[in-house]
Image (tube, rainbow, N blue to C red; front, side):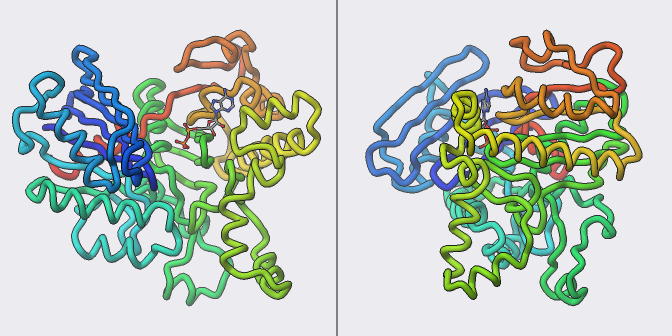
Length: 395
Ligand code: ADP
């Protein structure tokens, strides 16, 4: 069965076509600068023989043109791997949030309405997804469209961990509680540990990328996630705020700031960027810190502190820590973040092997042989997690 996985950004589209259940990648593509009349970038690879298409200055004023570019490559004699579009049996979307639909769902009008209902909670994600899903509906009306919501893996978080101590009616009326996100990534980590280690007990998975979240996993299931009702919570992100005292918002409103100014600040000018004033890219912040920039050093220190305190809290919730996993752009690449976090966890028996931590290998165990906690670096593969979820639903 051929399943197309589609990841929609506000100005980008990523595609990966899988043959399931073999989990073979057939083709992948990346469209950048969607919205541009003449300056889009398109890259496509057919995996069987590495045939590539690389184009710049392409017209992608809307998602329609971006999706069409990919469909043309898939069907072309020189680059393609399909003879007709009907060979795609389902499209899986890395959708984020729909009120009342938190798992893996066919994208019916009701599910799409749920995405509209929670637009204010995930505006940067739900808007682009709704637009792209409608385009697929028009272009490929006969292909099933499935949403693998980022909340799906976290439905096992107990209510006693997911509720906020707010008036209970707000939970009943508006559904406000910790939902958790990055489900495709943490779910993939749990599946990898189950297949490699034979168990996924007392695990903390750290997805550290442009946005960051930690997940407590036991018996292969999510028991906690540092994201909250929205994707603005938990450890701080490259330019988003993370956890913050709720009363800061009414205070700033009373001081005369508008709600738009406040949300803009919390979304675009907080996190690593907000504290360092240097960049939202950890590489540049670390570089500045090494050169003596005090606020950059403070931002990195705060980032490490928040990772360590979440790992500590989850270790207490899990009743111990057996495996610690780093994934995502920062988790996979930053030797220093992994070293600093693990040094602080020495009291739990975490002991890194410096050579393993620094080796160029992407997928590796970085703890020393006598470490009480096994520390892994596992490359994120959210698309595969989605392809598996979609396959389970439609097979
Ligand atoms: P996204 O969450 O947008 O999918 P990624 O998971 O690819 O992003 O992570 C991107 C982030 O990874 C960038 O913001 C960058 O700060 C960080 N990053 C990548 N390589 C390194 C590195 N060597 N050291 C520190 N941070 C890195």
